[in-house]
Length: 258
Ligand code: ADP
Ligand code: MG
Image 1: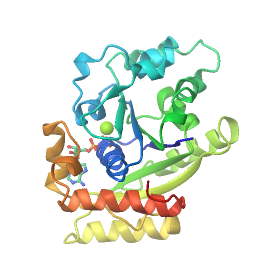
Image 2: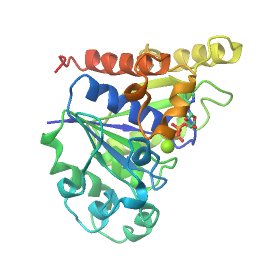
Image 3: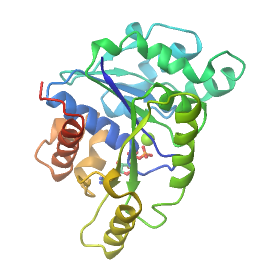
């Protein structure tokens, strides 16, 4: 049964989508069958693995709101061992449409139950919000990775996110764990970045991944190519760091290479 990991932080621009696609592609490169679930109406993860959101007919939205089959909604990517459950702008309306349905926090979990056995890892890219879709993602997940950008106000909002995680652990998903806090866009030359690293490590200690993601142009360019950096430039610093993250997660979970 595949391990489900959400990438969440209600702050925008901290590296969630970059982490979701490059971690998923790294796990696929290690030959783990991996599914990336795009749970953001902006559909950046969908286009980031080369699928045009405009071409998407059935998305995670229909799986959650209309009970469409996840298996039938999954599409291939150009990357071996990597599949996608795409997003669509319609997902914006899902929060409102789901307000009155029963078990509305469990819809993503119910949808993914059908395909969980087909994958080793399922990575969910969350939107920059703590709304119902993100709550669905966290309810469906075994663990959550929280990307934190090495910038001013890095810790801002983290308290609220951790509190949401606690509430979900109490009410909806007692098995939810924090897989780790991931420092992103790290620039060794910047004093500020080093201060942020110190501060985050002081607060969160062993929860912080030893792998840090450097600020790297290949990572920001790769969505333009419609593929993760690791797929088109495996030797770049950014790609190597995400491969190291995948290996660190395998070690933490005592998973052997496929
Ligand atoms: P989020 O999904 O949290 O909003 P993104 O992953 O989309 O964040 O990243 C925000 C922006 O920063 C994007 O333009 C992305 O290409 C860029 N970016 C993310 N991580 C890095 C990195 N390590 N180095 C350079 N640019 C990055
Ligand atoms: Mg994003």
